[in-house]
Length: 344
View (cartoon, rainbow, N blue to C red):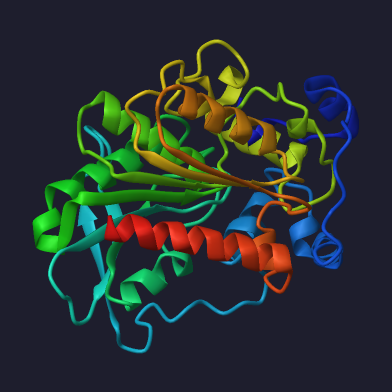
């Protein structure tokens, strides 16, 4: 099934996903931002017809009207783009490489995978997350452009991400990256792809990652949890958008037995041998329960996990409602973890 073959209706969503479940309240400081967001372009129902508009709004789709960041950080960052080999038999991929203009020896590497529901975004989407560490001279960041669904369904996105990660590790010396401090980072769909890429790296025995940073990751295509059904027309990414994204990636396989854990990491049975993990979620987002379960199973598999759930927060609210105390706390906590990881 391609995305263009269906348009979600209330009745269809009810039959495919079950009834809407209860949700916690939004944080009072975030509620006005969520309401304003849903009244604007971001509140448009996601369909094959509205997908081009979503893509045209990236990379700042979640924060309409914000200007693109200065990737040079006022001259402190060198910006380069390279075409590198993709997966076997697939086209080349493009990597955005950000490195300090005045490097001071080998640094940690941040391999960044952008969000966008598996269906939108590019290598520049969300790089403001990793830019400060490069500007401070603490890291080299590499951001991958992977092929998007539904035009390029699974396994194209995760295999592109792995190809970019493997190239980065193979060229770590020339990039100024310490191979013992190679960190994979992703938010939302990028978080799910980061988790899947980390599983591939483990199973293919290359490269060795020191940490994975999974920011509100998209992990599970099955809609079996309470939180996967609790937002309908609310927040940035509700259950209907989630269904559209997963179906775009997996087609008729979505929810069935033939889905790879590299595509939907919540399906992985063995989580041992993965790197130290930072993982977070808002209490009011559809990914919440799959994230909490994934963090628990990582810990049970012997992985060191830093898990944070932020009460009243919704998907992307740390950007959309950056003024809120809960947003400032979540950003500061993540920043502190990344800085420690880069120095490890």
